[in-house]
Image 1: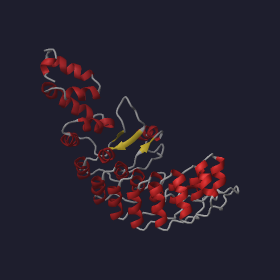
Image 2 (image 1 turned 45 degrees about the horizontal axis):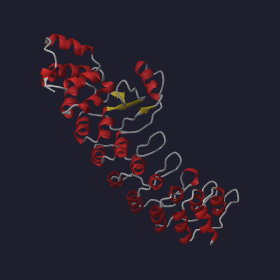
Image 3 (image 1 turned 180 degrees about the vertical axis):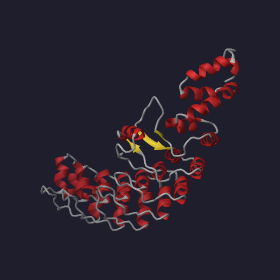
Image 4 (image 1 turned 90 degrees about the vertical axis):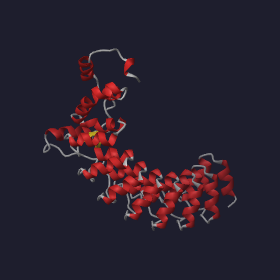
Amino acid sequence: MSSSAYPPLPTELFLEIGELLELRDLSSLSRSCRRFHTLFTLMLYQRIRDAPESCLWHVMQHDNHVSFLRYLLDEGLPVNCTMSSYPAPYNQEDICTLLHFAAQSGSTELVRLLIERGADIGAMVISGEQALVQRLIDRNPAQVAPGTDGATALHCAAASGHAEVARILIEAGADVSAVTDTDTTPLHEAAFEGHEAVTQVLIAHGANVSAGDCGNSTPLHYAALQGHIAVVRLLIAAGVNVSAVGLGGATALHLAASQGHEEMARLLIDNTADLSAVDESLRTPLHEAARLGHHIVVRILVERGANVLAVDRAGRTSRDLAVMNGHGPVVQLLSLH
């Protein structure tokens, strides 16, 4: 927009108006025309420098965000300052560092800049109500210890699918085995989201493919549940235990069967998944597929040798569960065996 679209007010009045604007509005105004860019950019820099809780959100709105952040760091913005995940008025109760934001954004330039300036690669996210605790800690660090979500910048990069950012972080010393408060590793995050390239990077740098979360579920469980074939192939090639037991005693085949993932079921069975494995309810993968009406998966399991007469803890066969849940085609199929 041309500056001629605005009334020809004195510069001093515009500056006074700028002082009254919210940071977000000042950022937008500074990018609206050349005159306002000249008038308000320094004011914007100073305001963001003094309000780090939302600075990277504004940095990412800036056309030259790397230079913008470099300026802020040069002017004294702490490289490890913490901030809310979202600026006002959203007030999301997460506290992250600049590096978390940069890793999640996928900007390799921002990540490199922050690492060069000494960013703490192992810093963890404080989330939920724990963000309220952080405010108390800021006032008196000896008063209370925070709970943490525990996600590192590498977790953020892995969950967002930024393979090159993940590589940069690892080469700078990020721990591929770092865990959150639920014991999930960056590989769990990549597997759940189906990020093949990030999975490759993590495995190549020594990530434990058999690491269990707080429920003993491995990255294979996460990928199988979501139906991410390419990621499962990578995990199998890296030597993961295909029949590992996770939350509730379920194997990856239980999860694939419960979701009706036909190709996934075939892949797992081809790689020695145990058709007879039982969960804590003594249900097999066939029980799960039948209970939820996944006709094709039921057929695959039966054709591969699943025991149609196996009973769960309540004494019910797969056919019984199909009858109970009204899955006619599955009942008919199992009645033939």
